[in-house]
View 1 (cartoon, rainbow, N blue to C red):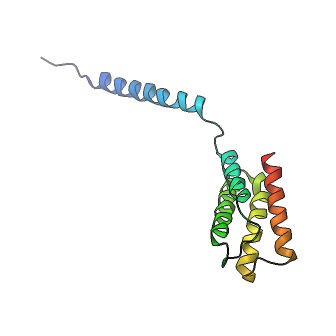
View 2 (view 1 turned 180 degrees about the horizontal axis):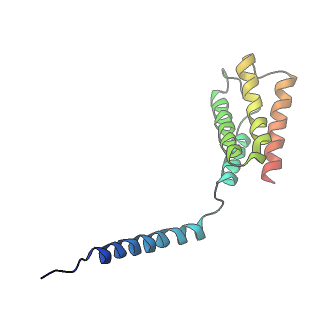
View 3 (view 1 turned 90 degrees about the vertical axis):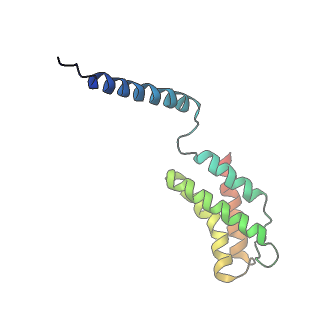
Amino acid sequence: MRMSSRWPLVVTGLVAGLVFGAAAVGIPWALTSGTSTGTDADVAASCAAIARTDNSLDPAAHYADLRRWGAAAELAAAAAEADPSLKPLSEALRKPIDIVSTKFSADGPEYAAAVTNARQACADATS
């Protein structure tokens, strides 16, 4: 007396469960998610942080602003990796940090122009 194998039934049940489970998770996720890369949120957060900072990123006097600006520049760089059209924003936000890092000063016309350009890049990106 030979018993019939139940493996095909078990495998079919497992496959059906995986398909229905994936659909149950995937469909609501796809319907409720915004942009797939999240770059809009990254740009908004970066520029919001820039808006909260003073124009002086002097590490001796405004270290928190320097750190905030650096974090905003990194977030913009992450957004630019996902969306290359955001590279100018990323570069504009990075420039004041680079100047402070190389000159150890948050003064001068080059620095002032970099801050102005960064703020304008944010205004353009969020409008």
